[in-house]
Image (cartoon, rainbow, N blue to C red; front, top):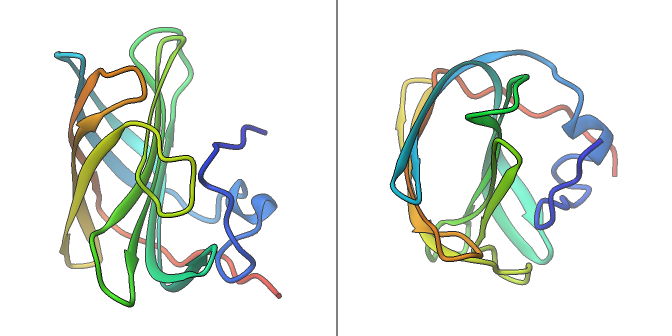
Length: 160
C-alpha cells in the first residue's frame, strides 16, 4: 500500500483502508504536461466527491481522483485530492503523479507539507467535472493540464 504524504484523511472522510478499496470505476481522462513534455492517459480510475469532509481542522468539500496503470514509462500513477473550504477561500490540492520512475508533487493544503506551488480550478458538469492544474512541483518542474472525471461517486461511509 502506498500512502501519499498530505493525503492523510480524518475520520470524517475516509480511512486508509477504505481509500484503497475500489468501490466502482469511473472513466478518467488526463492531459498533462510536466517540464514541457506532454502526457495523455485515459481509462478506469476512481473519482469521488464528499460534500462534507475534514482535513485537520478544515471542513471542506472534497474531490479525489486516483488513476494507475501498469508500465515503466509514461504516466503510471496519479493521485489528486482537491479541497474547497466551506468557510471560503481558495481551492487547495494535493497532487502526486509518477512518470516512469520519477515522482512529482504539489501540495497546497493548509497545515500540510506544502511542497511546490500551484492553483487548481474545478468545473463541474453533470455528475462529473474537469480539474485544471497549473503549478510547479517540489523540484521546480512546471506542471499544467487537465484531469476529467465522467462521474464522481460517494466515498465509502466511515464510522467515527
